[in-house]
Amino acid sequence: MGTGGYYPKGGASEFAFSMIPIIESSGGKVLVRANVTKITVCETSGKATGVTVKKGSEEYTISAPIIISNAGAFNTFQSLLPKSVAQESYFSKLLKGKDCRHEQISNISQV
Image 1 (cartoon, rainbow, N blue to C red):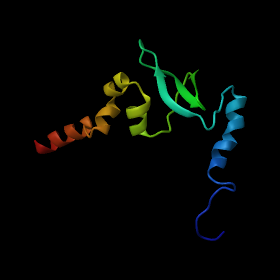
Image 2 (spheres, rainbow, N blue to C red; image 1 turned 60 degrees about the vertical axis):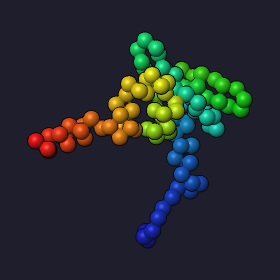
Image 3 (tube, rainbow, N blue to C red; image 1 turned 45 degrees about the horizontal axis):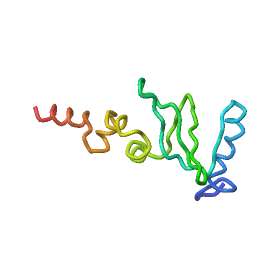
């Protein structure tokens, strides 16, 4: 092999496409070109219960036992989660630049 960059035949999307049969054979569903508009959360437990997606002009809510966001922390906590949940999260402090651990380390180092 020579040196240089490598990429999968067909592009990076081939990684995702190769996982679809595995997900579906395990009972999962894969949606493509459907924008997630929000992550739904149980009001009593605070756990994520599904997502709402927009496909064309229709919106659908899909329930799932596990929700994984690949939108990045900023988009997930600022746009997809309900504000009440996002504001209570540790990541909310991080996004505002208020990392509690950093503040504690700073305070300790000043002593």
